[in-house]
Length: 306
View 1 (cartoon, rainbow, N blue to C red):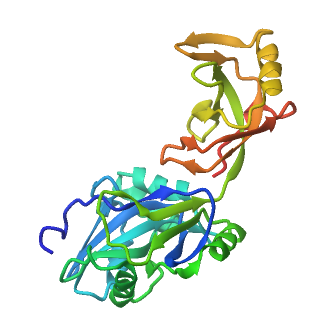
View 2 (view 1 turned 135 degrees about the vertical axis):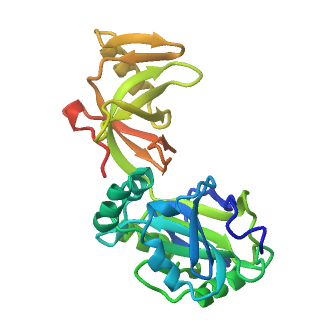
């Protein structure tokens, strides 16, 4: 336990699935849209580490309250840090909290964007639990925590992934995570024992450019609060031959700006609707599909939806 407590540990990570499923060998959790964190507690001391191992305790005064909810004398808990708004976790609010460094701004943000943590696994208490099956670790998580506003165990369903997927869509959550109930905890491993299935999201974007090779694709961008025309990804899927030909005919009429490698950048004038399945902490979109051109959409209106 001593080697794990207050040490930087990379958490176990999930693979990506396309569709929800039912399976009695799996339990299913809501996927919360925040940031992965490991909370280490011993006595009155608590420390928080990000997925990359960075210590961020000082950014979250709320951790003192979260520590009171951990009734175990010592524990290493795998959690999602979230900022809730209207019953749902808002990723950008928690990302804002992580960017702050000034103590006065941190104190103000703790009031305006309070953070909380949802614990879904335990790596250690007075002993390591990595090799114990997940359904036993879930029981230990519940034994370690007296739920509070700042820290609570993650709810889950046994075997019924489709029902939970529908529920999370209804409540505008990010999706679900399927976890094999007898699996151990593999720190730092992307494991097929955990499978995340996210809801597709549609957004209107600016076509900033395109490439012809190796596959035809649009370079798409969005406006953010602090930066305009930020590239956020490529879109290859869903573009028909007819749509590609029509697009190339339009941009040939004077929208070309500059060529960089295989990318032809454009003067920002065209918008489109895309669907994406995943988004990085830096708003890079993946699992993208083209849904159609938006000839009446103003470029200035293609904003990231906070």
